[in-house]
Every structure is written in C-alpha cells, then in structure tokens.
Image 1: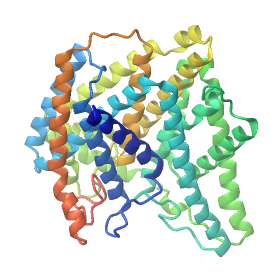
Image 2: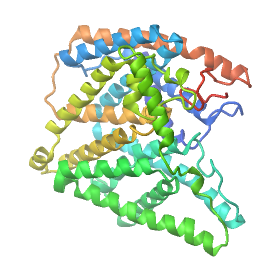
Image 3: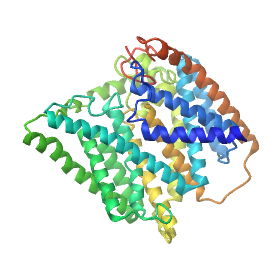
Image 4: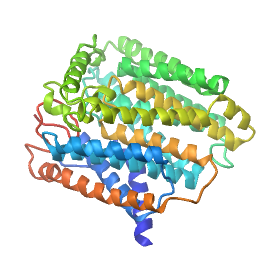
Length: 478
C-alpha cells in the first residue's frame, strides 16, 4: 500500500516540478551537462516513476477492443522495426520513451478524473509559475542590453533551449491552457479573480506574446492562426471568449514588441539583434523532407528504425515533420495506425464536445468550466499538430511531456463526462501492468550507457554518435 501511494506521489511531484522549473532552472551543475540533457534526464526520471506507478496501481482507463488490437499491432511493428535498425538499443530507447509517455497520458487522465478542479488548478499554477520564471530571465536580459547598449546575441535572452524553435514548442503548448483561469471566473471553488489581479494576468499574457514575436517564428503564428480558425468554425459563438482573448493578446503583444524592440532601442541609440534567428526561406526544411521521403521509399513497411533518421541524415537529426518522421522511422503501416487512432480520437472528441452538446449543457459553472476546457484543449492540440508538420514537436523533452499531458487531459475530460463503469477487464489491466514493467526495464537498459558516459566523460558527454548535427535524444557534441 505504501509503495502504491509512494510512486504516485513521486510521479506527481516530478511532473509538476518538471513543468514548473525545467525551462528556466538548470538542475545539473556539472558544466558538461547541457540544459537539454538535464531536461532529458528529468523526463526519464518522470517516466520511470510513471511506469513504477503503472505496475503497482490499478487503472480503470481501458481501451476498446478495436483500439486494443490497433495498439497491439502498432507495438509489434515498432518492436520488429527496432530489432532491424542499425542501432537496436537506440531504436528501443525511442520506442520505450513513447510508450512511457503513453502511460503518462493515462496517469494524467487518472489524476484529472479523481478531482478535475484540483488537478487543473495545480497544472495551471505550474504553467503560470513556469512562464513567469522564464519571462523574468528574458526581460532581465532585455533590460541589461538596453542599459548597457549591447546587442542580444543568440541564445540570450532565451535560456534553457538549444534552439529558439524548442522554446516555441514549449510556448505553443502553454498558450491556451494558461487562459483557463481568466475564462472561468469560478475556476477555483468559492474564489473569483479580482479585477486588478485579472489585469496583471492579461499584462503577463501580453508579455508572453512579445517573446513569440521576438523569436520570429512564422510556423507558430501560422499554426496558431489555423487552430483559431478551426476552433471558431467548430465551436462558433461558444469559442468567441477564448478567440477574442487570444486575438487581443496577439495585438497588444505585437504593439509591445514594436515598442520594446524597435522604438526603445532607437531612442536609446542601441541595436537589439533579432533577425539572426529569422530564416528567409524554407529550403532547409525541403531538404530534410526529401531525405525522409527517400528513406520511406527505401524502407516503406518497417522504416529505418525509431530515432534512426539521425543515422541517415547529414544535416539535421529529425525531418521537422512529425508524419514524415514516423513514416521514415516506424514505417507506413505503423504511421497509418497512429493517424487512424488520432483521427478516431478527434472524431470521438467532437462527437462528445461540439457546439450543440456544449450549448445544451451550459447551465451551471461546472459545465461552463468543462466547455472552456474542451475548447482550449481542442485548440491546443490542433495548433501543435499543425506546428509539428514544420518542426520537431514530437522530439524535444518538454514538448513531449506537455503533448502527452494535453492528450491525457483530453482522455480524462472525455471519460469524466461518461457514465461510470466498473466492469474493467482484469486481464487487460494486468497486461498493461506487465507491459509497464517491461518498458521500464527497456528504458533503463537502453539509456544507461549514455547516462554513465555523460557523467564520467567530459569530452563525449551524452553523445550517441550518429552522423547528423543537432539534438535528437541527447545534445550531440559532434
């Protein structure tokens, strides 16, 4: 009994701490351990606690038979693909990580179902503290540059990310969820945000948008726009409070960006370099996508193995496109199964949460909160799905954790509004626990060599040794 509650508490504490502090604080004081490697280590620690919890704790979230068959087929294809890969250990490392993230989604769904408002309050608080800590670091760097008239060279003032696009992933996952306390005045039971406090929240969101414009990400803005349009078309007038808030913060964020990064530097006779991270063309993406297509043509059924795009690319370790990455590495059949599961999930979501059903239920505060949450989760998933087609959203540790947190919230929110059933399949539950134990063993076996190397060899660090440049699982030193 103690072990059951212990791993749940450890997993929850690690989960909240990871979301709160990982973008801003470096937990590994050793110089050779880069920020992204420290983030990956904590992600592995979180997944270990999640898998331990899955082994010891019973879960009531069971998949339907068709979905169970699809997941079993997908698992079989991925195992075969990993065994045939050039480096099976690293292929299994990526596969085990994604299975661990699947258990993270189930863990989040379970926490949400146990007490929706408390979990949402904890998650929103963690996200708000996280972005405030990051913005303090950013604006301290900005003020310092203005005072001393020094240009801002990458990566300053973006700390904690090896590439500004990794920051954009983190920002896009949080952009909708942090609006929930402002949309629902009864977000906390018996507590209403006072007017002055609400104004501070809005000001903080404006400052958060300034970072988006400074990072010069066309992909994020396009993904945001597509998700806003899709959300507005599906949820109609129910989406208007959220859409209006997003558009207002975009406008005030852009005006503030112009003032802070063009007018103020002009008045101070200083130069703040922002164009160095803006790409004029998409030629780099086209080359990466072509490499992925070549790999798909070479190995269409089983792919070249999870993570193994990095073994065949001479430029980047992933193709900056989630679908092409899965197809090139896991094979076309596995990718078709994943897309089918995703499509079925969206269909089920919209069947349960659409304009008509939410309108029919909008008669009390709790249902209003459910409606706001449904709209925000849909927007968040659509925005990041679109962005994953031009960037490595499914690759970096913080983005992976936030992605499966949103998926878990959607699972929990969908199941929480259905009739409770106690006829959980004991065989299915035991099978899931056995799988969690096996995945934990594979995760430890496949990640331990680089972890030992990273702490003992200052020159090699956590390097895997593939041919491509840039991070994939660890930050490569080649």
